[in-house]
Image 1 (cartoon, rainbow, N blue to C red):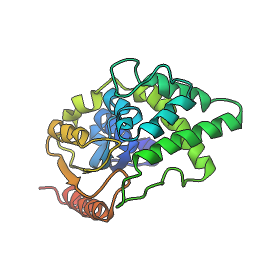
Image 2 (image 1 turned 90 degrees about the horizontal axis):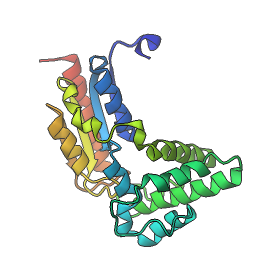
Image 3 (image 1 turned 90 degrees about the vertical axis):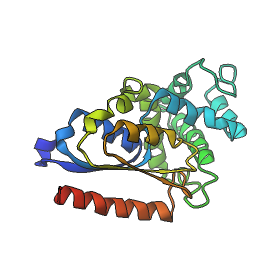
Image 4 (image 1 turned 60 degrees about the horizontal axis):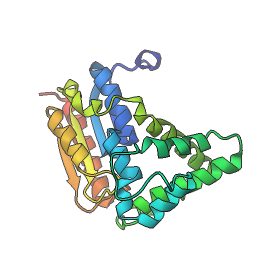
Length: 235
């Protein structure tokens, strides 16, 4: 990719699933990365997926039951969560529906998935409640097809590898920005990553959830300026 685009190194900016992709790329090609600006930090560990698609249902049991029941798995999953069955079974059911040749099946599955995602961000008064369902129909289908496919397979990653091998990022300046009120993914993930990544800066934004806030936007812009200064004027 770098050779094809004629790029020596680049600064990676990712949010949510984009953080997972950025970490996977940087840990494999650290010499190609000049810096990293990561928002709403995820690493797609199984415990993170289980929380997002089952555990947080403790706050929204009605919405979660609808999400589960549409997949036809009412007899397989219950709240509170436990270790069995793995949440991948529920995600695989949606992934299969998103590959159905019937556009009606795909559309209904995407609508139910988006309704769950919107439930998780519904309390984010400083951000954008309803942001998932507000997308155009084609974007909804693409989003759910990609998410269900990758998450049904744990992101095609060895569980926990991105945090476990974050030491490979030593020497790469990075800023991790995460909302304290991000119900879809707790601050524990960026906290663990910051401790495993030598020199990484962690910023927890108290008023923000997964969809951000004015304060988070300001932190992002300031962090981008700091990274640019570090990259262009190394000590």
